[in-house]
Length: 311
Image 1 (cartoon, rainbow, N blue to C red):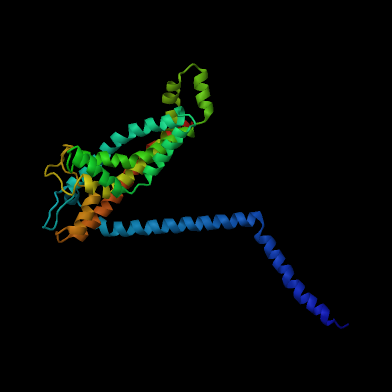
Image 2 (tube, rainbow, N blue to C red; image 1 turned 90 degrees about the horizontal axis):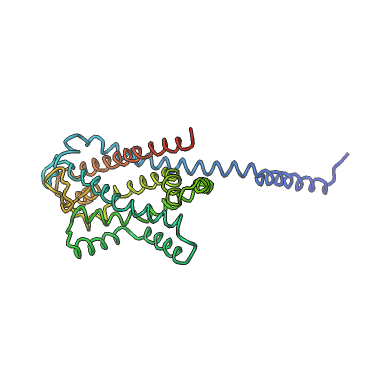
């Protein structure tokens, strides 16, 4: 029995078309789309982690051999090789501590006000918009502002206190936003239960809301501190590029060059012959210090969160 030409043509067209319909149905299957999206997200995450791991590994590979006790605690040298970064290492954490001392109370107060007291009005929207706008200001603009206000107008000069006050302006927007969001994530039933037991609004905030929001606030403080620890543009214009010859020097009016600023200074205008090794060592020291600082706050915050959840 012979097949017709029309039948062969119909089969030749129908079979590929049917296969395309089956493939299309499989591609539009919600499970297939979900698996494809998960695979893409995992791939993107692994690529980002790979880039970060390669970046950190390269810096640590170059800088860890430079690290020594003399390098971390020794005095810097302008023209001789073998100098240390002791004053810069101390100034980095001293300025960070002072900036957090200035910014955390203000950020907590502003976050509590916006989350618990501020009504839904145009003024509240303007405050939130101003906070978010301040977070987008380039750090070099804040540095110039700090130089005009603190260094020149107030007569503080290039000092630790001037750098810390200006650095607090960089910390405030992020801390305010993180505090507000952390307080808002506390369930309303916690507040209602506390008020039902006769507690005042402030007692509820202080003893119920803030303890439950504390893990999120600690996370925001950790991220802000890591950013501030590596800041350069602000501190170049306010804390200066020189250090005190005394270690440690707690005088807030002393010059306050930090590790990040010293790295920039050494590579930009430095005359020391081993400036590349110094820059590599500072890079590794900054990464190790930031990681240790993050772990020092993240682990207690995680334990506190587990305790609050009853685990």
